[in-house]
Length: 147
Length: 341
Image (cartoon, rainbow over all chains, first blue to last red):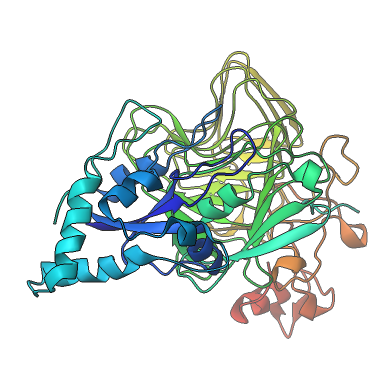
């Protein structure tokens, strides 16, 4: 199954509000996002064998000091995608969504089409995202199995 | 007179459709973006939803700082509201899920009165522990909401719930729960206020109030109850069967039929209620219903019991049953024409 994960692009200043990397929502791929979401969040596309119900767990909320369940810190994502421009991700005046492109390439890979270098990059990203641990709970759901 | 649909001071409105094309396609993203101190910002955030089947995971309105003037509201955009009956065809603002847990939570914090208005909900999952479709706390309210066909196999999914020890009470106003397992379950030290609600066709029990919990019901229809806590009732019908005559309950139409004598005109006027005063019914005009501006108790009529006030369509200029037009009940003509409540 393919999913799109909506990730917070930057910290909000107030205590207890969402922080950069917090997972806000998980929606089946492909999805048409709203105008405000594309400017405020980073959309990461993943593929795995989890059900939608399992994936929704990533976006669960809790009442208490920590509201959000899981996080994909942008700095860790950038380790595996150096060209990810964090300034653009955090700039709400533009809709910077580099992973949208990779999602499309991902589907082509599945069809057996050779996409060359960029396809390899997509594989790399998804492989390495396996290593990103959530920083909020002891549980970890592996959301990014390789293609 | 007060509408049951509260409005916030200085509303800032965003739009929503899960299929895109609006401000938001993720209702949780809107919730997250508006999770701020509304009081210091002096703003009320509103999400206006467009009709469709919206499949979502958990939604929790929580942690924003609110008061009686500044709070959050989820409601249909103008003309997108339901007409008092679930359709399942995308003509209503309908949220569906297979999420395995307490699904919609509206518990904004102390003295918050955040509201979810005029939406339809359907949750399907099999849980062996008690879970709720809609839950709330701290005086939050669900107004004009429908829960239908919510089920699993263990009989432990219920429509309306309240957080533990939350005061003031969570309010359910003009709400309908049908074809589920339970309508209300208050497990421990919980408190709910239900006004003009209807709960029918439950596989378990319509109302379950356990020791230490309190349910206050006015003008409600429940097919049965199991009470070890406190259930205070004012002009309610609690019996199995309820004896109420509906338009077409077999097809989920729980509007009162014109022949009904059990619920029609038997309610208490709540327009000056000390805790939640209101005077409108489930498909009031602002949200696009055909009965523009319908209020309960107008023209000298008494209030009905149940989620929606009985009224003949306004196109008949007040001609009300049992009067007939050319030998046909005005009500039946309204049905043929697809109008009426």
